[in-house]
Length: 98
Image (cartoon, rainbow, N blue to C red; front, top):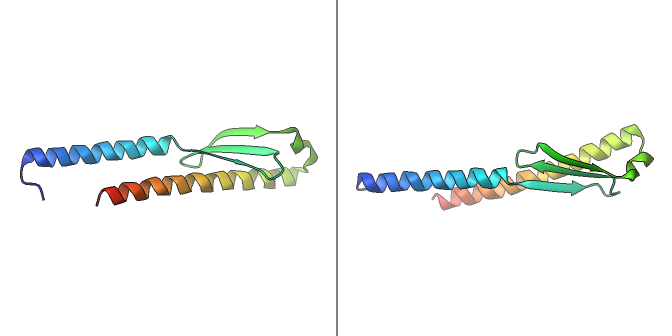
């Protein structure tokens, strides 16, 4: 409970700064995953959106369906890692707010 308007303003300002820090940290997330054969490397942001894709010459040995599977699985693994990082940030934010 706050006793004065100044305390309330300080509390709200602190919460806003923490929320902005969380948003900045979430925006800074980059998760990268490389397929086991090294053919595909995918980088995603904190929302799981593709921000980088690297392909090596090893993709020439893959059939189209296999390439699709490798690409999809690698992207899913990168997104899973990014979501894990984001969850850790949100958990830390929530704990600090209590």
